[in-house]
Image 1: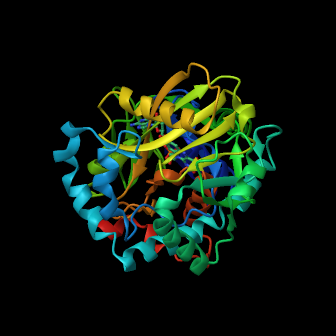
Image 2: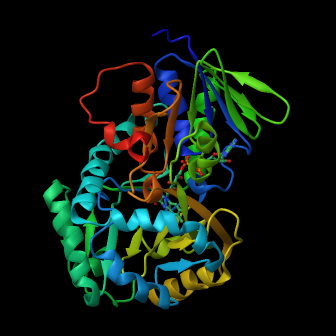
Image 3: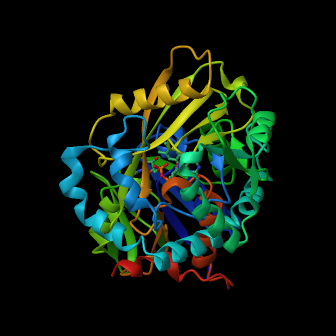
Length: 413
Ligand SMILES: Cc1cc2nc3c(=O)[nH]c(=O)nc-3n(C[C@H](O)[C@H](O)[C@H](O)COP(=O)(O)OP(=O)(O)OC[C@H]3O[C@@H](n4cnc5c(N)ncnc54)[C@H](O)[C@@H]3O)c2cc1C
């Protein structure tokens, strides 16, 4: 296939930019479209910054349904609903329930593991070309929990063991040695020493974007509203203009469904909304990201301060930020650390999530010149580089030993 092909990518989040950089490595001419400037406050900006290659077990797990009522009733818990959105989300929930059997849980875990295992080496190929000094730290990631939920933690530990994921169980005193400022509410945890974290996801994204432009990439700030076809070539349309390419990649995160619906695909993408706040100048209180597994949130030391981040809220793309979720993060953080000041920067972001908790990576079911790279839920930051590498290999017709069928949109046909 000629590497002179022109490729259009819709979306300049971590998925779009990573796809662009790997396509450029193969010599393709790439244009990125985004309705905002790269680094705008979308999911790729406000996440927890974890590079988490260990996180193969997703939320479609056998034990989750029994826990949901208690999670919803607790104001400090990890889960919330916007009630006005529940009717719209019922089809997604029903599909999700079907994906919580042991067999489906293991299917997701195995196929997440396949790509997660390659996630850090794929990033290293990109980091070789930019100066990430001070932006990525290699101090591991720590999860801690209280005894009450040990049973649920046992499932995670067992599944990860089965998949060969390296994990280091830590007791109270080992946790205290790692993070002496965390109040000792915990009874145990797990430490992933090889995990990394971003001190500033936006700056990393902008470094990648600079590299993209330096290599001759083009950027067009516009909202793509439709995709049509002329002689099988995809034509991207905004209000007034048309842009024709040999191939296009849809990498619009949680917003991708607006375009895939126009391609007669029935991809059940929805969003798990998540939040963050910053405690400016308090990043020194912890040395690495710490996740409170019982409460479903984490704290990451970042350039902006201590970023307290997480929780899952089902409520679609249109509802406004929930003050209760912000309060939940602040209260939870103050239960873990003494001396936190007033918070800053209340942020709401949209995780793109399919009911089987696998991303969609690969060609469209209906149009061979349209590719997808979205739906990476809680792990889209970790999976940026590897997804871009996979899609670029598909477009270049490279051979692969990987089984890529599990990520195809054909699974929803
Ligand atoms: C609270 C929270 C914490 C998280 N923490 C982590 C973590 O620690 N580690 C991890 O691996 N993942 C994490 N994630 C998940 C991760 O952030 C996302 O999966 C990932 O950022 C998605 O990237 P994306 O490029 O697919 O989408 P986005 O970052 O949402 O980017 C999509 C882009 O497409 C553009 N766009 C959309 N529609 C159009 C259109 N029609 N025309 C033009 N442009 C369009 C948007 O403007 C946007 O720039 C977290 C997410 C949240 C919300």
